[in-house]
Amino acid sequence: MELASRPSRPTSGWRSALMVGAVLIAVLAWRSPAQLAIFGSALIVAAGSGFAAVPLLRRWKARQFIREDGPQSHLKKVGTPTMGGIFFMPWALAVPLLFAGFDADLLAAVSLAGSYGLVGWLDDYQIIRQRSNKGITPRQKMALLIGAGLLFCLYAIVTGHSTAIRGLAELGWLFWPLALVALTGTANAVNITDGLDGLAGGTAAVAAVALGLIVLPAHPALAALCFALAGACLGFLVHNRHKARVFMGDTGALAIGGVLAAVAVLSGQLLALALVGGIFVIEAFSVIAQVSYYKATKGPDGKGKRLLRMAPLHHHLELGGLHETQVVNRFYLAAGLLALFACWMHSAWLRS
Image (cartoon, rainbow, N blue to C red):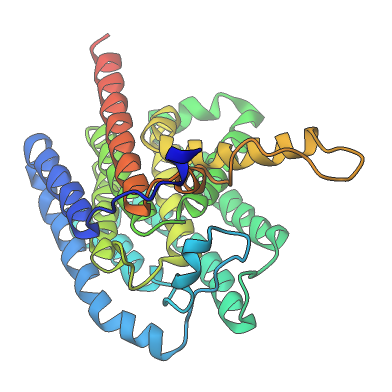
């Protein structure tokens, strides 16, 4: 307990962001240098847009409201502008169209991600308007996400010209719940992960580059979307690194999840998605485990036991004594290892 309460030494948010950026640029330069233009363009325009957008968000009083039952150290973040997804996600979706053209699958993935971003914007807008940390209801949010997902899945089945989609379609009716769980689950998992400065943006950039390299040979247009997403997320980190000047909000988090899941469904790489997005999976399951354990151990007084100090997992680690930036750095490292493992698994499968 003494160790858990001992304050830990913070690390630089700039250093973490630069480290992730340097590694991703080196990986792309080694594996696919032609994609650096897409990655770099999205990074530059997203970062540049932030310098104009952040003051505007502050002027519009688009401020974050922090949950009262969260870590007390986060209360100082009250008033930080949110809804930052409006200035970096449009570039993540537009840049690949400029480089890869109006490919049908690319347009479908962009449309799905854009729809998820709009759902997130509606949630953020309600939070700001009501001046609380509660936006639209979970049922409303899920209904909108499922509705957009159903239209996307219908497109995938009707136009299933790729081997990947035909393979998934052979699952019959199981395709629908599997695809919808991937779409809505990934979006919500990224949203859950978005709880520390730079955490969701950095891990999403790593996952996007890995997924892009995996789908590149068979689906170059979808890979372009992944690389643009990675660049835009790093551009966002310029403003979201610790100490964050802006948060992405649901506008950004749901759209990021939409891109990753849409690419995975259209390319038939759902297993790769689970691996490269392993951080998001772990974060989501930490919440599910916490809630389930609490309900299972609930006594006559209506109170149960907690499996973690606080869910999601990043808050558990914070309350264990790690500084916010130390948690983020550990998650960056874990995301990188998962990405390497996913790429190795894919290469091994191709060779077999």
